[in-house]
Image (spheres, rainbow, N blue to C red):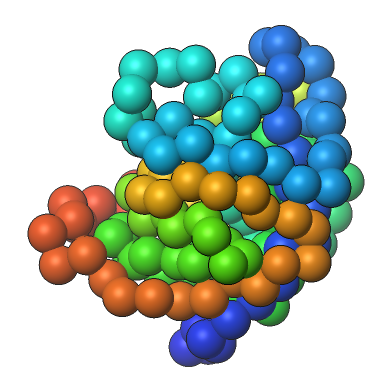
Length: 162
């Protein structure tokens, strides 16, 4: 993959409601520090849980030929190859929200229910989990900018293909 550009754009914001239901697309969302997106079922987990927000780049979604929300992403980003970024990379989502990537999202068996073979196809293209460092409102169309990299972030070894 090429070197990441300095910015991208939020193409879609989605909330996971009850387990097993489709993602709900919203024009804006409120990010809560240490929790995730208000109204998303993952934000109810313990404060500081690693799965607060799932960011996915639209190029990966398009390559996998799945509809928006099918990979359970919360933030779909256009123009920024998220899977090339290291754990600890901090991002600005719009003017207010700051997140830090924690690790790649490992595909789960549920993807093969969408399409046989999708689990294997999505390996390395499922997006990045992130924690919310600073809350605020984020909207579709907002810019996503690279900030600094947390030098103290754990370095995750990317898992190999099954």
